[in-house]
Image (cartoon, rainbow, N blue to C red; front, top):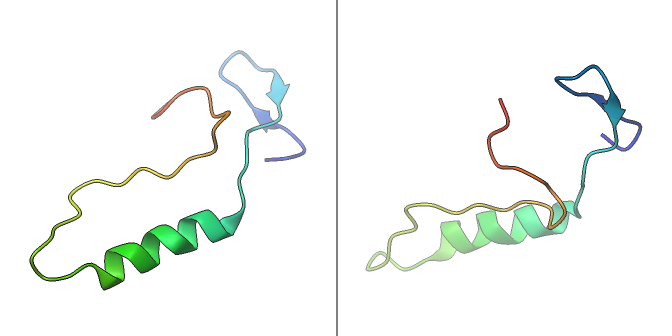
Length: 55
């Protein structure tokens, strides 16, 4: 990701990244939420990521 990833137009572009601790904290939150609560959706992504679901 930090060296460049091929894009749909053929260019290599560096992708936005984030510290893995952010994901770990989100997983811990979901694992420790009380039974009265429900985490239906949780999106954790780098702040400079341009699009969601660019497939």
